[in-house]
Length: 223
Length: 236
Length: 48
Picture 1 (cartoon, chains in turn blue, yellow, orange):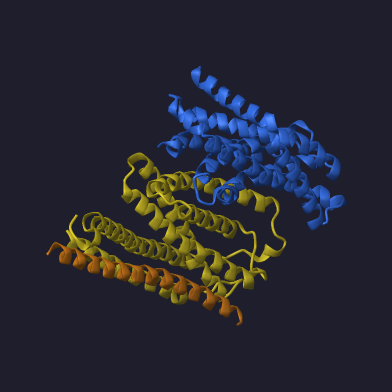
Picture 2 (picture 1 turned 180 degrees about the vertical axis):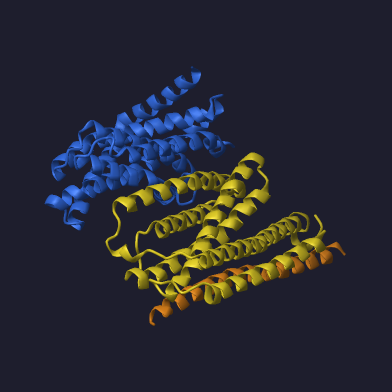
């Protein structure tokens, strides 16, 4: 019970801290829209081409915006010395990880809440369906979990934020491929059963990543 | 004790040299000429063998990562970084030979064929691992953090493999239509010998790399000893 | 057949990479052993 309370306390702390300034979320949002623009110009996305490319562009944007949020939230953590305070308390290390990961998940979710309708309108693809929302949720969970773990590693390096995308993106590949393929399949009129394989892969990925992260996070923050 | 180790090392070097030469002999003299692709297909044997080593080396790093987190002993870290260096060379081999095979067979230097793609992904993970180690100064942190990265990175590799395989099944390259190979038993034996030879080669080079790292540690210890006890030439 | 160029190139790559790896390790080992020897000699000197 105390475990859940700790996790919740950390989530609330992170979300409240962000809510004060909202600078990270706004940066992520503005960046996403800019990325969307760049993709549209670079790939000349119009009409049928745009529809076909929509899932890919969506997830590429989410991935890049995600790395922004992930590094920012952990750097802020380091600057305020919060994590040291947390570590002094007799809390389960995995609770700290889950709290931070859920917080990062929340930030990404807020960005997606804006992005999905925007993409639906711009690319003329039906993204606001339960199937697509499920896929989005599954993909974001895995990304936020592995991202939080790797951001904790990256923040210790000389290169800091620059290190995170290099560490994160190769590891996010299974999740990104599955999310894009599932979204694409659903958007083209497929049923949930038809993209079942991809959804199963997403679930397995999420479970494996969360398990490994929970098991190894403690080793990252020990002194 | 040292004599035995040296002897074993020499034996390994001889064995792996013989094995590689035997494999080469089989590839060019024993394996048949493939029907659709011709002699170019012979790239296949060393390409697959290096892919195997590339993967296996990272598996070793994964295991050493767990070992280090469990025991915090330097030897696990040495094994991890040594395996990455050797594995990086082999996975690079895989990607380049794969590309050189793709060109005559499929007309393009790159194809998103599952094995080639997963090799490229592994290559990037190796590079990321190396960059992570370079970006960390404290040796203990370096060992610990890269151990965690090695573990989590490795578990995504099988998942990436499946994802890429399914992706290519749904969207096969129109270009890669001529990718089929008529596989004969002789090819099977040649492949097996190549795999064995490369594994021996990996172990041999790995041992040398581990020895190198141990020497570096010895040097660092000697330096530290000299600095603390003999500052400025006089015994402190 | 021009395709044999690729076959040759692939095996050349194998030899080149193996060679580079092995020689690099060997060269670093030599350098380290030389430094170890000179430092050990220094230690002997300081002890006298």
